[in-house]
Image (spheres, rainbow, N blue to C red):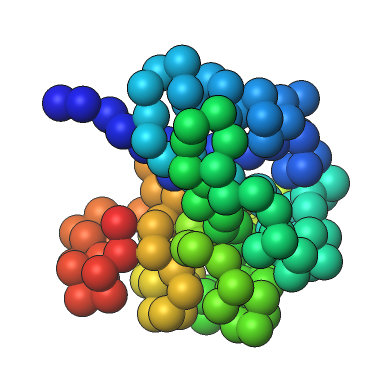
Length: 156
C-alpha cells in the first residue's frame, strides 16, 4: 500500500504538540513522497489553539509547497452530547474538510452512550468528513454505532 497523504497534522498554530511550521510539515511530506498534506489545526475551544480568524483567513494561504498540495481544514472540538463544534458553518464552508474529535480539555468523558452520541451527532454536520482518534481511551465509544453512523453520513 502506498501512502500518498496525511490528513491530520498540526503546525505551531495549534498551540501544542509541535513547533513545526507549515513549511516544515510540507518538507516532511515531500520527503515521504506524499502528494497531499492536510493541515488541520485545533479549533478555538482547545487551549492555545488557532482563533476563528485564522480559519476565516486560511483560504488565502498557499495551497502548494515543496511539491505537495495543501488541504486546509480544522480539527474541531466536539463541545457537547448534541455534537456542537467550535467553528460556525460560514467558516467551515471555506475549509476543504473538518475532523471532529473529543478532547478531554474541552469535554469531559460522560460514559459510552453520551460519548458515542456526541461523535455521532457531530457526524451529522455536513462539514465533518472525519472523526479524529475515536480510539482515545479517555472516552468510551461504541464502535459499532460509530461505524454505522459513519456509513450513513459518509464520514471516515
